[in-house]
Amino acid sequence: MQFERYGKGIAKGLMVTITHLLRHPITVQYPDQRLNTSRRIRGNELIWDNIKCTGCGTCAKSCPQGAIKIVTSANLEENKYTVEEIEVDTGYCIQCGLCVEVCPYGALFMGYAYERAQYQRGAVVQANESLLPSAERRPSGYMHPEIAKELPRQTLLIERITEKK
Amino acid sequence: MMLPSDWPGGFWWHWLVFTVIIIAFVLTLVMGLIWIERRGMGRMQARLGPNRVGPFGLLQPVADAIKVLLKEDIVPARGDKIVHWLAPVTAFFPVLMVFAVVPFQNGALLADLNIGILYVVAISSISTVGILMAGWSSSNKYSLLGGLREVAAVVSYEVPLVLSVVGVVLIAGSLSLNQIVLAQNIPFILLQPLGFLIFFIGGCAEINRSPFDLFEADSELVAGFHTEYSGMKFAMFYLTEYGEALALSAIITTLFLSGWRGPILPPWLWFVLKTIVVFFVMVWTRTTLPRIRIDQLMALAWKFLFPLAIINLFITAIEVLAWPEALPWTMTLVNIAIMALLVLLWSKFFKLGWGRVAV
Image 1 (cartoon, chains in turn yellow, purple):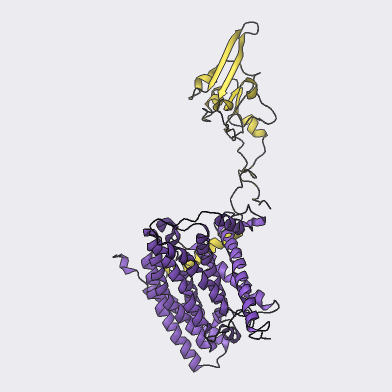
Image 2 (cartoon, helix red, strand yellow):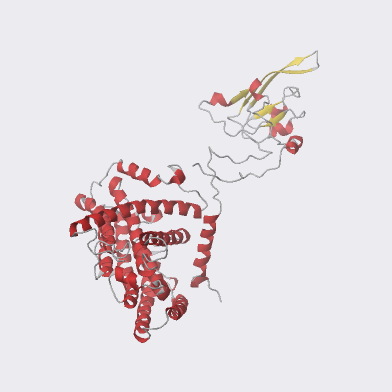
């Protein structure tokens, strides 16, 4: 005999709500708390290693948005190209990661940033020095398993939702 | 010890003290209830609920009240201005008046009417007039629909509600709420489980709480009768909604949960605690159950609650007549068994127009 329409259905529903009352809420209070980002995140910024880069321009050719501009000149003494200017308009970037994938020398990395909104379009353009890695701008493990291996294992969830008292 | 009927001395002092107590009690506890509802409902839906104003969002009702006080008061151009102005007042005052006969402890009530529960039933229906006035005077089809649905529901649910109260009155042998509490050596929820169930469902439907909130159904009637209200007049309706919930919780406490009686703690605290527990059960059902249709609402009143209330009344009358000296605990077991049997039986018979609705 099925008791669902004799009150058992309502009792089941009441049990569901009361168990939700006793568990932790899943709301993340965003500016105060942030979810952990993935180790292999494709963030909204690029990180460029100027030592490894040979200025071949494969990244610019692969970019579906045409967001990467690279100007090189021949450096005959060292038998390679010198990058005179590299400019990435992250306002156009769709975070597809193709530039990182195609780089034959592993000189490009995705970054962790996802909060780069600005008031002017020009302010989201990264150029030359602002592409270099630093303590705040660490390269993500995307397409670079040797970096991902070093990062600690983690879940996306934060440990415990706490409230501002 | 029972408080004298003119405590703290003199008719007018009694009147003044208890009027102030009732108004303060209703307004402060309503704020608490709004907080419990919003926080509790949030947590039951795996959200946090309001938590920015004050510790744990405790001051959120205060912030809402200040906001609503400063808002512009808009009256529809083609509305009936006098009725539009009178409606929130008409809806709110009966809520305060109900508390005149609710005992906070032994004898501590504004007026120990010997027909207390009849007074409650009569007065609490006046709110409906206010809501119909609001729906009518707004000159808005959604408001009018909401107001008329409310009237239809209250007219239907008043019948099982009053019939389930009669069972309690039969056992207690008095209509005075203070006498009913004094008669409860064990809470009447045990002697009258079916009556409690009917009273709770009927009460929730009367004060239009979810799942019976189809008079203000946000998703279909855009808040129903108070669509056209703003500012302090809207706040009055908001206050009415929670005031009615508080009044219903207080009356359920008094009728079925032995009111202010309880060990150790002072009586008034027992009363407040039980009221809050009853209100929490209302919040719980509200969060759990989806809104029902108007035909389901009517069918529940007339096909389910009404016959069960009549049967409950008969069984209680027979029990009171035939075994007035029976042990309360045997009666409890017998009545719970009868309730389970009747609810199962009626659920089997309960049908909604055989899947066809003609409007």
